[in-house]
Image (cartoon, rainbow, N blue to C red; front, side):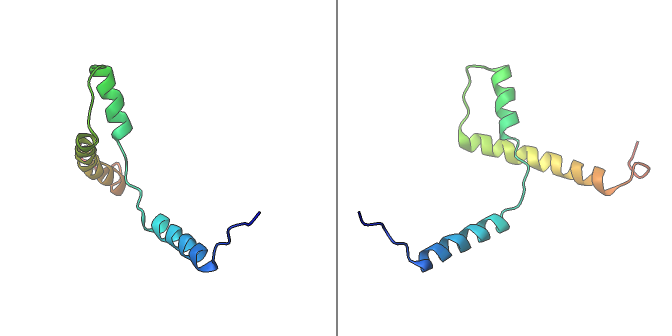
Length: 81
């Protein structure tokens, strides 16, 4: 039985590619699961496409990020009441 031999160059490229991809990815909050759950609670028979789910996810991200940054950059005395 002959075993396939992988050249060290290909293995190095794969390892290098994996490190670059994982280091370059930023942690962005993902609301798609929560959006889908709420949709199924409100309209159980309704469906949603990936594109429209992506649009709603971006909308939720744009709404919640400034609120998160405001609350975590200020102390409780600086927040408006």
